[in-house]
Amino acid sequence: MPQTVITLATRGQGLYEFTDQAAQFTRTAAGGGEGLLTVFVRHTSCSLLIQENADPDVKTDLNAFFRRLVPPCSDPSMRWIVHTTEGPDDMPAHIKAALTQVSIGIPVMNGRLALGTWQGIYLFEHRDRPHRREIVLHLSA
Image 1 (cartoon, helix red, strand yellow):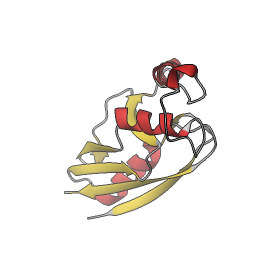
Image 2 (image 1 turned 90 degrees about the horizontal axis):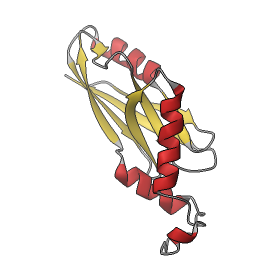
Image 3 (image 1 turned 180 degrees about the vertical axis):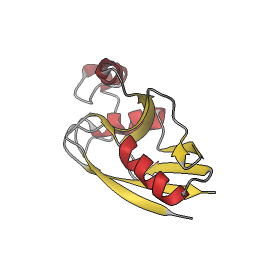
Image 4 (image 1 turned 60 degrees about the horizontal axis):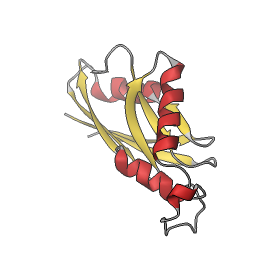
């Protein structure tokens, strides 16, 4: 069962597409066959999304929505937060990750990801400062 780890460098909050890396791994590992690609991020303050990759306004709106849904601890509405030792964006990042997902399964058909025309795979970074994020790709038959 082939697997690999890819590392993404983030520059702060936002969506970082890595569809091409996942597709390349799948083409090589699947050899034209069928299977399931499991994508797993090894962190608790970011998450994974399959989302539209054609219109950049989608990323802008998703970022704005999650900032409004879960503001930083410095926002008066978040005074109830206890975990603040890693900064005002850390616990909100954990909440955002809990609301989304850290693992995604994508069917593989004829050696290719069975994504729709406008779908891309994204790391959703929830922290303000840059990070290096590890994503495990695992192909099972």
